[in-house]
Structure formats: structure tokens, C-alpha cells
Image (cartoon, rainbow, N blue to C red):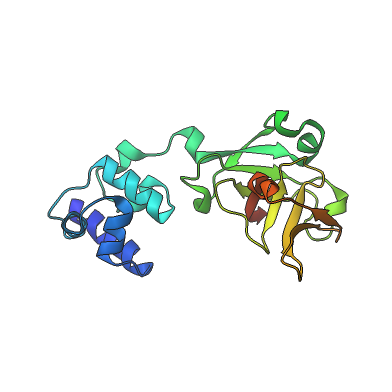
Length: 201
């Protein structure tokens, strides 16, 4: 059965265009060890799975084949399977002191993302770009780049803005209602990238 985990690993590596050497280097393992894992010569250990999952940006169980005996050992806890949700109006009022209003199921792209959270939008100034009741999925570890929609953790007013760059190379925020927000380079570390928007109710 472990051989199936190796086949799954090879598929994940090749689908991302990674060489054995590149994966070995990223994982801090030898090229020979990665090869043995892929070919089923060496069984996977839980630490292999966790280390490789971080490299591929997936949850540990996504590194395993459906029949893998390691699945039960590495299955996600309730906390890892859910995201805390904050109300946008609570963040605007209470800032970093705001309390979570509940949880939602963690979407696949957010598995294994430490500190991930969601924000529900209630602010009419965000219309029509983001509808009332939409939920922003936030990856606080993903670097914010020009063009990204981000949550403004400087003061939460405005709650969300786009990162833009002007002709002089100055990076600034642009609100959804087209107002410019000046940012310093230090401010960029306090912006959290929106990686998805859920429009469910």
C-alpha cells in the first residue's frame, strides 16, 4: 500500500514540473531518499508526509493515496478542518481585538495554511465589487503583490483594498470605491492576501 503513496508523490512532483533534485533540496532529504519513497522501496513516515505537504502547499492527507495506512494517523483535527470567521463590521470597530463570529468548513486551497481565516463583508461601500454577505478567504502567509485584493490590517478602514503601483513605482491601496490609500513599505507586511471569495449564504 505504501507504494501507492510513492506513486501519488511522483504525480504531485511531476505535475508541478519539479525534478527529484529540486524536491529533495526543498525537503532537506537526499535525492536517493525521494526516489526510494516514490518507488515504494522506503515506506513513508509521518514526518515525510508533513514536510512534503508544506512544500506542495497542501494538507498532509492530500499527500497520501486513498488506501494509505497513514491517513488515520494524519487526519485533520476539527480546528484544522475549519476556518474562524470574522464579521467585517466587528473588525472595523474592534480591530485586532475582534472576536471570531463562528467557523466555516476549510476550503481545500486553505488546508495546511497556518493562521488562515475568513471575513464576512457587510459594508455597502464594497458594492458592487463584493456583494453583501460575501466571505473573503484570507491567507496571512501569502505575500501581497501588486494587483492582489488584501484585507487592511492597519486599521480595517477600509476593510479591503487592491494593491496598485503608480508610474513612479509607488505602491498604494485602491479601495473598491476607487479611493487611493497611501501605504508605506512597512505597511505591506500588515496586509493579508485574499485568496478566494465565497458568495454562499
